Image (cartoon, rainbow, N blue to C red; front, side, top):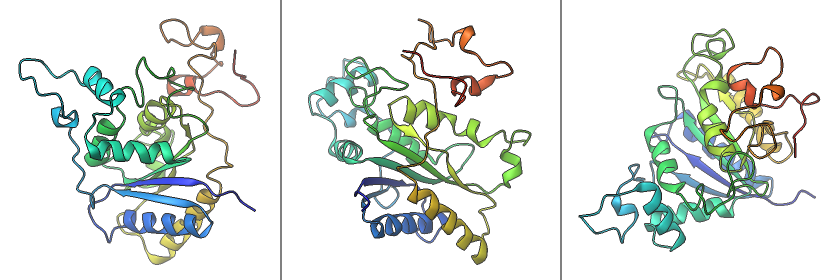
Amino acid sequence: MKSMKKILIVSAHPEPRSLNAALTTFAVNHLREAGHEVRLSDLYAMKWKPTVDADDYPDHHDPARRLHVMADSEQATLEGRLAPDITAEQEKIRWSDAVVFQFPMWWFGPPAILKGWIDRVFTSGFAYGPEVPPPYGEGSLGDGRRALLSVTLGARETSFSDRGIHGRLTDVLHPLQHGLFWFTGMAPLDPFAVYDANELPEDRFEAARQTYARRLDTLFTAEPIPYRSLTGGDYDHDMRLLPERERPGTAGLDLHVLNPGIDTPHC
């Protein structure tokens, strides 16, 4: 019998009749039918405030003192003084065994409301900072927590390939996969993507749902992206990859991914 897991889905699309909304509903239902517990943060439905400001730290009232976002967010986090909406989302992440982001690719990144959710929720003292474990491998949000990006794109798949004009999708999503999930200790999975998404006929939508179902079914069994650990011996004091760890012919962002069967983590 499969063990029940807890999954947080964060959805970001302004239209409740959109493809992203349909994929969100499908994921929630599919995971619940499989026996998992699911919580949903539909950011537009929640009318989420996307901007960081002093209101996020209610006791920051001294107009003579500058707002220092990292220091003030850390102090408010550690003292339990964050705005209630931030605290609620942090609790959902702590509760979860996996986090799924559902969003359309807008200008090579997530919608501003999702970026704002990240900015406000992943505070110092919660997701990063000197009071939590080091980033890139350990991180405060590790403990086996997994992360999946489900992305819709208007462009064709070939345009996001190795020779595609937009660049590889893995590179475009690197700030989220490596810079958010892996930085905070979560284990990122290969993304699920629906291309040519502006007009999706019923047969292609059904195929996409079936593919997504298989990805959701392996949410806790698929191998995560094997990023290198910051503390595993591959990087120097300046956080630069040591030359002897570099695989011949590897460049760019691929330098930070282990080659299974060739590279092994260093302790």
